[in-house]
Length: 368
Ligand SMILES: Cc1cc2nc3c(=O)[nH]c(=O)nc-3n(C[C@H](O)[C@H](O)[C@H](O)COP(=O)(O)OP(=O)(O)OC[C@H]3O[C@@H](n4cnc5c(N)ncnc54)[C@H](O)[C@@H]3O)c2cc1C
Image: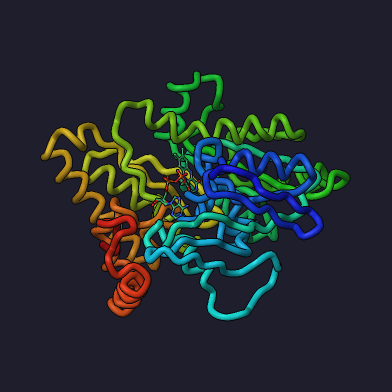
């Protein structure tokens, strides 16, 4: 079930089967001048169905929102075998409850998505990017706030810490990243005739924010090269040989600098390296505990789990959430009840019970 069934610019929709690879959808839309913005860094390997079931995000959310904002209609096979069709191909629809919102992000717990009608928007004509390195992560995090506070609406705003940069230099070669202990990516998109003027103005601002180096990408090829590099960060961490406990926590953006300070403190207190990078514009920083023998050394596992407890406790106490885009699944099941209210847990259970009373879909996951 991996077909692109329809691409219809007149209606601004694509109708897809869930096994379609996300990159293939984005490419097909781009070829006809249209755009499907949800863009997790796994786009070349993840299915549209998987991104719907996890309500995937990615770098473009800071301007374009998450997957849910692009789902107009769904066909879902319910656990009792009935086929539900909800929504349609209209860009606005307030007929009944938001059942699409219930299934998008439901992690395969409520039904199996067999077809989706997705919203496409006109592809931005042009994009341009700035990358900058900073002496430390805190200065880069402060730069994120300054860019937004000055009225910029980037289509990507990402930061990366020193541990991740070192892993990337080791994996990809030292020449791939200039000196600095933190890295900032800012992407702008818009009209071809104004984008370079915007880039120049943005550069004037970034030059005042304490950067060590600032580089510009003015054409599609150099922009894509930066995103390609950014997508390698996750794989670079894997290549360290350490186990990456990837926590895609999210905090209100004003807490970004506090989060970074907390991560450094956690590293000192536990001796476990903490690699931070991600979607700073949304406060969604992937905070990766880099553990040596998580699966084979019970003592190491206990230590790492205790560190995760501290991390999630801090996040919840600071009005954050334990997952911004990957979902609860199995890995964060332990913390679900701490992260939401008892009434919310009860409502989740009732929904699951109503749709899947025999518990046949994704048994054992966070509602299991
Ligand atoms: C290198 C890397 C970088 C990533 N970066 C990001 C990022 O920036 N932002 C982000 O949001 N995510 C990111 N992710 C996670 C990514 O979003 C998920 O991998 C993807 O959304 C899941 O797609 P999948 O095809 O791998 O799904 P799977 O892993 O196969 O499934 C995910 C879940 O969805 C359920 N599911 C799958 N298909 C259906 C269906 N048709 N109906 C009902 N349930 C279904 C499964 O049961 C499972 O619970 C990243 C992952 C990797 C590996």
